[in-house]
Length: 626
Image (cartoon, rainbow, N blue to C red; front, side, top):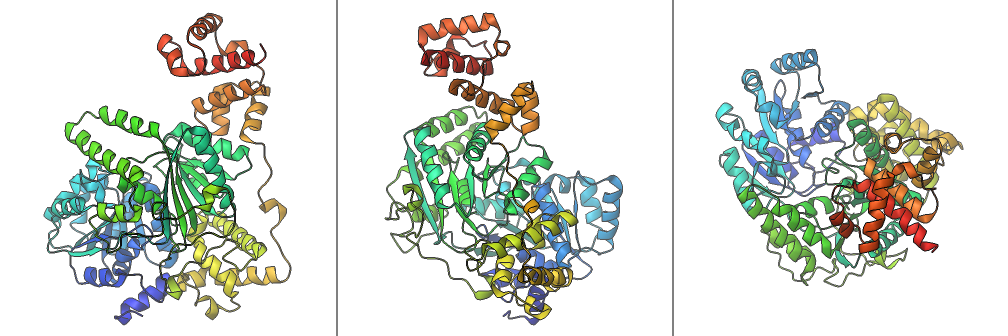
């Protein structure tokens, strides 16, 4: 229980928790006392509660939260509103009238939290009206973005250095999951924090098992990926790919093998990104394949593996992305399946950096991540040392260097060698909506997930905002029959019980009476990506039209068609490549062969890559029958 009854009561009332995670209460107490703070806490450590709770306790005053993503702000506001904490956001998606109304309510002290982008806060008009508002504190999320030494430096964050000048009497709190000592010092300096309370959590995540495997080529990498996904066939997995093309190709290959996968990258429109994210978050697809654009603010506890298909740009990036596994404290694999060519690709992009200082910093990050992947040294220890933490142990037993043998890469399903897991209090433990977590009752898990999804769709919010996986899993285990029993479920505050309690109890009664998920609510069978592409081709659709229908990049569609041509699944159509261009390609192939595209590209720099890719496919197919 909390040392302060008021703080403990708020934690129970709004969040439905009986206890804090490490450091949370001290951070809350410090902010309530009006002190600046710098908080470095790993992904899943509960950073947002640290500024939301003190904000909730300060009536008639508003905490201003600086956040880098509109989608993240939307979700946070939706969650707070559901909990009964008045909150709002100001961003470009709001109409002028909505923005004026929000400003009036902030000036009247009606909100406890207001979310803004750093660009918005940099505007003189925003500063002007905020200076007239009753504010409680400023919370800077993803604060490492303010430092040029950070792995995600954003120039717009630099403008936050003016906060102290504009609001000299308000506490400023900086929050980040991944900041080296140098970056932490830069954060303190840039934000001009005054005698800040510093809360630096350990960077050691003992429940994560780090494995780095240098693959000899794309075939070995794909084999290992498929083995890992087969091993975690009933669990959630995140796969990080280095480019948009790799994201889409990997997603299509997995779907073609019957693996439920969705894609996420920056060139998707916002609605598609949000839909795919919700599909994964609500268990309708178990594998998310994304670029680095995916993951910020994702609150899914039961991710059993994060798999990288290339070397990240930095240890900070890897730590942040890999840290999205095992947020429930249970063992999880972080698999880095890289190829030697990744090193050359990273070096190539670094050399293209125009700013001399940034290029030097990029080279430092390059050497650090390269050494992490290649060095025969404990990977947990390497990470801790990188962030300035000096562990007392030499061997972790939870990485490949220290003897952990991942059965996920050996193609075996079943029991694993379990690394030491983090200790958890009963009220802040794991609990998921997976089959394992609900005591082996997959029908109940499926039924309650379907109820959650139907509720979310009716309210037009993401399913995890209705109930987190951990709360849903605990409901399935405890099987409460009264509102009082529901209030003992971790994560169900008073407002949640008031809003959804009767519906949850009715759903449990219906399941007990024999009701099950209706067939229409289950995943409907669909064509494979290749089958869908062939169907659209047969309808006479152009490559551009197919890309639009399938929500894929044009290059991804053409690459798939080329593969299908080479395999004999699709009939070659001469209009795809002009006759004169085809003749030139044949001559180039006669000179240099068609095993690799680069020598041909060197000979034919003016030929469109898509046409070259298609032409080579039919030439390879023809050679097969010579």
